[in-house]
Length: 286
Image (cartoon, rainbow, N blue to C red):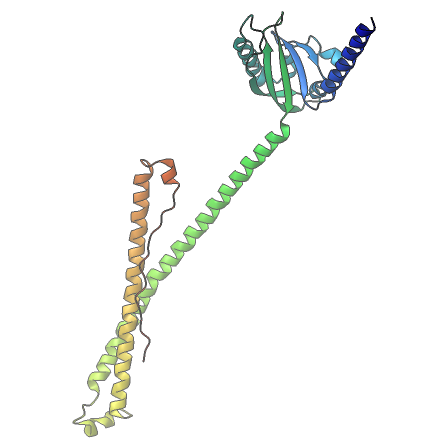
């Protein structure tokens, strides 16, 4: 008799411990019937649904969901009980769905419901754990918004860089054209001046037409012509360089468009590396 009393007392303590763990856990626990009615619920589940335990018993769980979550919940019930075999004492597979609760005050709460049917019981019932994932959904929305904002900022920066590049290209294309005309005039005038300079033989006769020493003036004119020729070479090389760069950029863009449709995603994500034509080496004036 005393042994039976000790056993009953131990079972009572275990039941109270289980009840405390069941009620004090921060996750909402529900026991649902095969048609989705609430058979049992803990304190966290009552807080999620915003109602007292006595008002929730025998109520349909779908009544606390928004309209769009009704069909996913019904499919979850069907899938959970279909995975459990009749007569099998073991539990079926866990079914999961993300649903949205309609709060009494008009708000909404996003939840994740993990359910497993107990096929060995009669009648069959389903044990469900409900987790509030509203913070996770808000974080996901923030990430999507930040990604969209970052993508827009990248597009804006790209557009500004493209505009600056176009302006730079227009400027660089105008520089050789604007420099070549005065360079040609300077070269022509220097060449005309060189031809009018006296030779060494009749230097004394024609040196009075030009003020200054004839050989020294000829040397200055030769230096002027040499500098003009080197500057003309640099301007022509600059124009050829940017013309080549523009053709290379167009060719690379066309090659990318043709290859991006056939290559693998990992290959498309790889960076393209190219070499640019170097500027011509220029020697300083002596």
